[in-house]
Image (cartoon, rainbow, N blue to C red; front, side, top):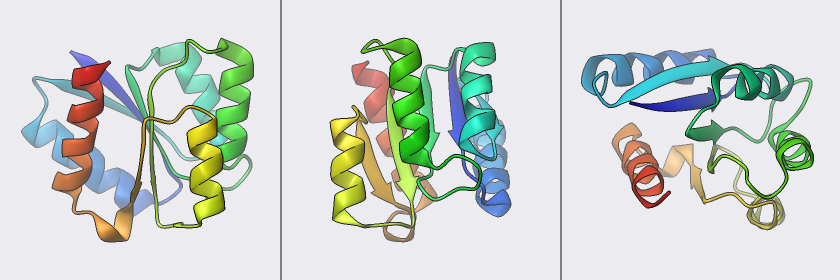
Length: 126
């Protein structure tokens, strides 16, 4: 079973994401969550996820700060990351890609099924 860590401060998105996975994908994926980058770094060490779904704009430590800290902590052998954000700034997207993310989805442009398809693509190729 693959483990997915979702780091997002949007409690509604977290709940929908967790509920969908627990109902429809419980045999394939375990979902754990964090509400900011600081908590997310702790969860990476505790949970050893196979994939991280990461928001960019969050309190305490935003997504790009999280990526820099993760890269510093784990070097190049880091967990695959899919950015899922409502933030579509090209500069932020470019910086995320430079930090090694595997993909970037703008939540408002994708359905949850679309995000799940991207997750499955990344996990299938990692």
